[in-house]
Length: 254
Image (tube, rainbow, N blue to C red):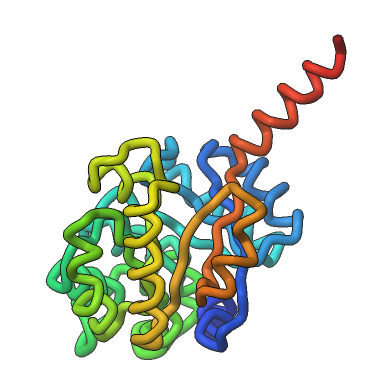
């Protein structure tokens, strides 16, 4: 048995646009449905969704059945969470609230085994290694890890050059909602000053040769962000889609 190829990382680094959806329900059934829907990736949200480490496992298993690439957003930038999620077999992580290069460097270290990082050796008997079936897992896993860090504060925007330059950081993802709030425009991700900051982060991330990402539920903006260099594009969420569908059906009943 060999370590799985991170097809999402390979596609993103090749400059291919990859669309995905947020999974915030905590449901492995919805994860499996989303996995079969045709997205390039599905993100299990451990920051705002009710997803503990134990909740993530059945969703990762459901996505594996569908063949859709799994991403996990952890709750915060803590190395112990990174270790547990990687041991579950996830290869692509999104880390929220990364404000500077030091935080980014810490997360890059947590993603990789020594000598490139500080990841603990527990995966030898975990799902990531096929429960020990991949004998050389610690020696080959590093190359398949993909780290995306979120820039969602004015401080992160100011430090974006240094963040994007960190070795081991594969990409930077803009969080428009938190960024707008931190800049003094809560609930206004479309404010001109916020849009200017978003464009700045995307442009400098692309210039650094790294993956640029963002999420928007506005379909009219998908092509615009792609033209700006975004390749990791979040286009919706399971609960938002379900909510709209249920309310729409109920509304049509008259």
